[in-house]
Length: 171
Image (tube, rainbow, N blue to C red):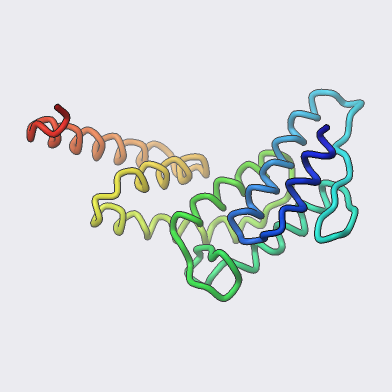
């Protein structure tokens, strides 16, 4: 069943950065599950009409994702397009899962994306986009940004909640 599920995931016909990130993150998570039973290995998958090991498929997916990183550090849906902050949060989150799954992820790619996300925080604040600010903080925190980000988010959420409560908008 797992082989069929992984092949379905990799044969899905669309290959934007968001979908590639989801694909390789799923393999990384499956690899972590399989690591509990040393007698089991991940089955081969079909990626771009080629049968390959899960590790090879992850590497091919990573290479495509790396190609979609812009000079700003953010990721675009396809190579040559503009970076998208929400997509970058999803891709970085997936890259952290891939790294946790034991696959090599280029640290410079992560570092550039994290700088981009930190720069996007001011846009989220300016636009009063608390949901994006929280997800951004979560991703930065997972990447090791630490307690300062969590404290900033907590303060902002409390301030927003207290403001909404004072205006009666939570009633």
